[in-house]
Image 1 (cartoon, rainbow, N blue to C red):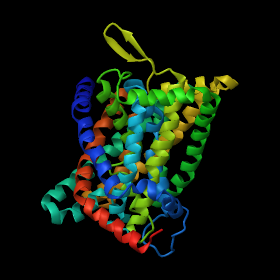
Image 2 (cartoon, rainbow, N blue to C red; image 1 turned 90 degrees about the vertical axis):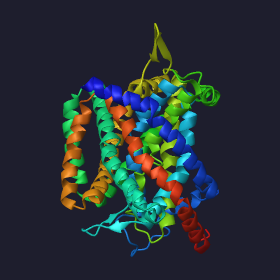
Image 3 (cartoon, rainbow, N blue to C red; image 1 turned 120 degrees about the horizontal axis):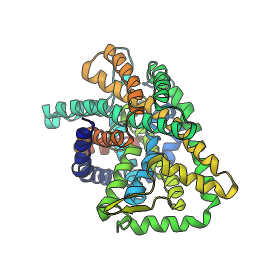
Image 4 (cartoon, rainbow, N blue to C red; image 1 turned 60 degrees about the vertical axis):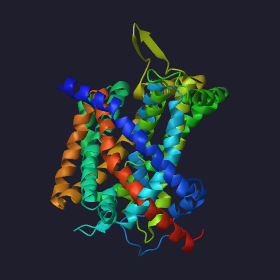
Length: 464
């Protein structure tokens, strides 16, 4: 049974899913970048001012602050994709895959702005008085006048995809990578890790978005600073290799010389898939968290959301990529006709950090740094993704009792993900992403005029 499932997942991920993303994701990112006149670059300063609280007002509608909304969304995006995902992209697609990760990051900033602006504009309150929003709401409300009942179908498709993806993206791969890290470094059985983390996650998510926002607001700055300092230490110690690393990224981005198979297309697809997994732009997940922000201007939260792909993909993923490429351990080995990477996933990242820190005798610290980062990243991602799933369940079933049942199942699946083979879990995650991204990206093309109009009106009133 497991082999049949694995074969189906490989067939879908190799021949269907990536091309759906390629055809829709890059054009959508380019569309919003162009019609909004490169807003991700022009308004970065404004985004930082909003997050700092400059425009906060006590009576603004919503459940959490701009900073907490950003932290909740970042805690979902800054995860295993930054550690194991980047390593997989480089191991299988070569150094050039890092370039395509950057492309998804910069274009993703425009996409995040669009979808999060729409999420706040069309949000609602549930029966408990809490804010509920996201693509399922703006698809069903804003698209219905344009495409009729098909909008309802797309909204339901997205919500179902969000529930599936909460397990496939935010749950099982996180638990799996964390359990493997604890086993490899501290010899803790994977079942024990899965059990303990499942209980911890439930203790947080049972408190809803306010508790999730508070925990994320604490975890995200700590874990990001810890990882960034470690990566920067490696880069500074091996500064003489930085130029060569960037040269490899650019020289192989369009040639695909280092990709195991598929050449240029293989390099590009590995970069796009892992970039999307990391920053989730266009996938429609982050708008669910941002919809809860306290604000009376939708565009304002859209501006905040642009910071996510920048921090997650342009900054943290780049640091990981440089550490790995400078370490040189991503090279491929051949056995007859079988060609595969020497190392893969979190193992490659760990070994690269160990090698990078060895000049000052702290190589052993590398594995502890990656293990601790993996634990923090995975825990925070799982916590925030549970909220995405429970908002989708609420949309589908209109029942808060169903949300409680979902949270219990979500916590149990942490354990299940921890004890499954890594390749099966990641293959399921790749497939699940397209279930969300497809209806959301289709909707964004239709709703581009609304995004442009909301942006124009806001900056006419607030030029800064």
